[in-house]
Amino acid sequence: DTFFSPGLLRAIMSENAYDDYNRCSEECECPICGCTLPITAQGKMFRYVCEFCRWDSVEVGLMNPDPNDLMRNIRA
Image (cartoon, rainbow, N blue to C red; front, side, top):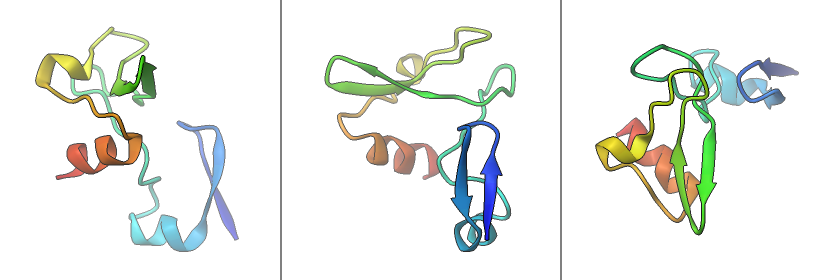
């Protein structure tokens, strides 16, 4: 079984969804407006940028050359 992630527009495996309380572990919410934050590449660095309110993770020091490490930093 799979679940659909509306924020990432793709399917996620059910065991991953159950482990993450029926949420995709790769999704984050904007701290300002609550919308889903996509990971954006800027050169060789990755960051989060809200498409609605224009909040940028660089403002709080969240940039990383590895998108998986960026996700780990925001979950920590």
